[in-house]
Length: 454
Image (cartoon, rainbow, N blue to C red; front, side, top):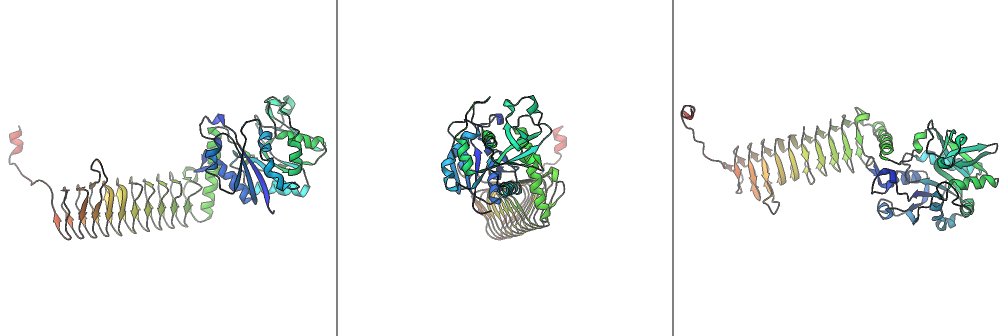
């Protein structure tokens, strides 16, 4: 298609979202909706993209790549006025064509944009409008056609009863001749129910001048759905979630129940991994091959190697090497790094800890700010007491050490290689290599206690 240009309209306040956040920053599957629009344009070979910003524009700029050009619509005077702000940036494309679409249409796909562009070029049209037929067209601009084709687009507030009965609607996505767009924008007036400069009036002016105006009817009307409130946001996310899961399944991932699985667009998953129902994978998470994830597990911004198994657990900003097992009902917090074949059992919390190969924290323990060697066994109910009220302190446990159940390790502390700690100990002093540490009160048995108690 060569070097082509597109304009994305993203200046709207989005009042129906009931949010202080700019509408186009609301996320679907972990990605701001405007990113889907930009990515679709790039996949459709749009190499030059102008984004028209307004409310909260500085925030929106942060999620846009540097190769997007930014212009501002300081006053919200309609879609036509928004495109006017981009005219100085279009001068180099005079004689060519440009796409115009909205930043709140995240379901539009690159294939659709290519078809729109190709039809526009093939028919030598001055404008081509992407349309859809829907059963309830309320709120949409209606496509009004005559003997010569598309004559005008009538907004809902300006439509009469006959025009409101039309089911073919404007999706807000267009392809224009840059020369004609520039000319007709200068002729727009805000004489309408909303007192705004309508971009749709460019289509009417072209038709009145006898210019060729084409339409392209969408096969899937839902793809052009604009997002105006939280209900529509949820519906759009549902569509994207199924698209994402479909891609993973076609690449060799088993998803037991796609309707009950939630995978962000930024997540990567290896072949032959099995995802059970209720799993939530978010952020920059990477899952290796042959893993078993779930059910009801949430993993955020974490990296899991091949063969990892996780059940009913929450993992955030952690790294797990190959063949680790986690859960059920465990919590791996930020800074956790597990070497190959580490076992984290049930009801375990691990934070900012490195664990060596083949070490085990089987169940009911809290381990934080620790460095654990290879082949270490940590018994049930063990706690690293890492916070002294002012600072977080480190616990180091050497290779092959054995920590008995119900042990308190009061940091800062070093447990030597091959050391043993008796169950029920509260350890406050360093333990040498191969030593046995017992730190508990001496047991005393009182005979006939039951009788004396009575």
